[in-house]
Image (cartoon, rainbow, N blue to C red):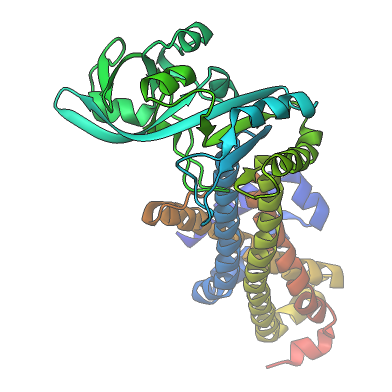
Length: 425
């Protein structure tokens, strides 16, 4: 088995012309280096453990960090990167049921702030919805067709309601993906009638699944909501149009470079219109993305430092074992030197052995890192993602550790006096 492993490693490395050219080694040096590793399997394995765990830590920690970054990005995108969300809040900072934002505020923003190209009003009700013997407590959103475009909501079945439905107070609605599943199970909901509160609505469409966001506010799950035309909700639920207040509105800014400035300007306009009373809050997904990127950068630095310490320990282990190996094989070095081997040959032999220990340990560490990443995903709700660059980084770092920490023992072996080496017992 050991012979098969050695032949496989020799063949694999000999096919890599870059490595052979870089280290300036031949097949004989390669065989000698592998023989030194395979003759002491347990010692070699224990030496590689530091590299294995160090590389595995790098892979796993970067996978956790990348998974968190992707999940955060998906949540931010769920709010719309070019959107600004304005929410009515009460004295405790929670979403106000009555609503503090007026329709006149929405119209004023569209007239005063030139960087805004679209605004979608939102009126919310927490109601019970009924279909046959099934019922569910859901949030009814009265809004305009513009809302679906701004939030990136796509249809799975049917179609959206349109401006005509809104202007003519049509009792039509669109179901979120989760609501459709809970109420209708495997039944096709299109065209069916459901009772929302005390009002009957006809289903014209079902939304596709949309990522859930927990950033900047309470959990926002568009899959478990029902959507109806804004003016239909005003009329059917006995809310006077002119005096109506909105719980939320979504502002769209087409120019990404002006989102933050627009948010600041819009906030000052609203605060002035509300007599300096801060009864609303603004969520800027693009700003959340910047904050998340900075947090992620710090997280990666900390995780990388921890993994780097593991690799450092592994490198020290390689150096110690290689120093012991040089001492143990002093007579062998003397014999090789007396038979014509140069200092460069001895240096290359031991440096190659250290690099192989580190590289083999690095490859094993990548496998362990993959397993750890999948274990984290399987045992928790935390998604992980192993990126190709983290694998390349791990291989490169492990090889570099072997070369750096193996150079001193290799240099010590090359500097041995051949006569003294031959006399060594």
